[in-house]
Image (cartoon, rainbow, N blue to C red):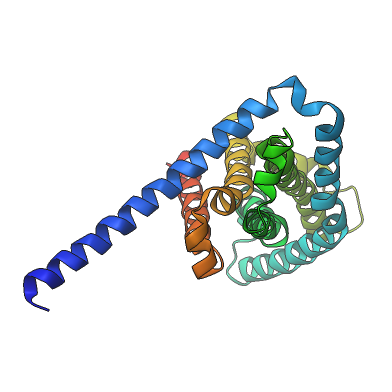
Length: 267
């Protein structure tokens, strides 16, 4: 093989990789648009579709609710203790509580909730969709006059989105309660100061950024693994077994959203 052939082969591989990456991003965007349209369609909430959606809402949220709540409370208690003790040793106790609220509630908890749902629900759901496609389940549904996207993909996407939002909201409440108990104990004496601090941290702009970040986190976690499992070419799925590019895209989107939220909050 001469130099020109090696250069041409390298350029061809780079082009194929870039094209596949662009197609992966396009599939994720397309799936988001499809899910949005189906969510706004009244027919998605009738008959069997409603039952499937209700089942996915329960399966992806109910079994993990108690365990994640306990995990969030333990994580918040440990981090609060570390930050408070460290701040006291450096004479910065007046800033400790605000720093804990900002780090836990604004930054750490939403990301932790979405990653938990991704590992527990949406990534396995993407693998399930791959197995369904390999068995020809989608074609069988189409022959029976059933839309496989509405029947199989939409309920899983809605379930993942609901699980992310629910766990994020619940864990934020748990974090606020845990932080208060860790600092003030079982007394109401610190409630006025804690409430005032909460109001100072959650200004209207910060609250808006927090809500948007949690929503986009949830959309990324709910849609990207499913798009990778549903729209990737079957020959490549048979050869590789799973679509690692979808996970890379998901983490890249989460990182971009986090950077944008930090810029919105602190710059």
